[in-house]
View 1 (tube, rainbow, N blue to C red):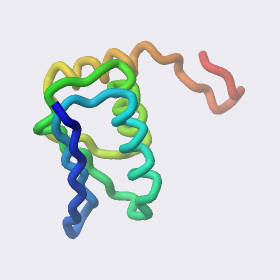
View 2 (view 1 turned 45 degrees about the horizontal axis):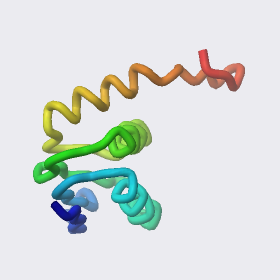
View 3 (view 1 turned 180 degrees about the horizontal axis):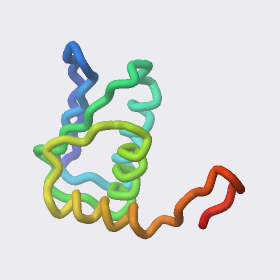
View 4 (view 1 turned 90 degrees about the vertical axis):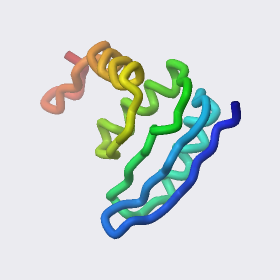
Length: 99
């Protein structure tokens, strides 16, 4: 299945509605689109995402940690994002090293 990104704007956020199978290539394309957004309120709607690979999950975990809101996330993707986040070493700003 193809991967699609539909951008829309609401009064409170820019929404990217994603659909289809998301892989590393699609995550890279989405990263480019997100980088061009100057509004700090961005939401990713994963309602119609059918499949993700590990690179896509790592990307989603990273953007969520950076403040991008993820909605309508399939439960298996949400669980995987949490596992990826838990597997990453904690960053310590006081010494600049991972704990």
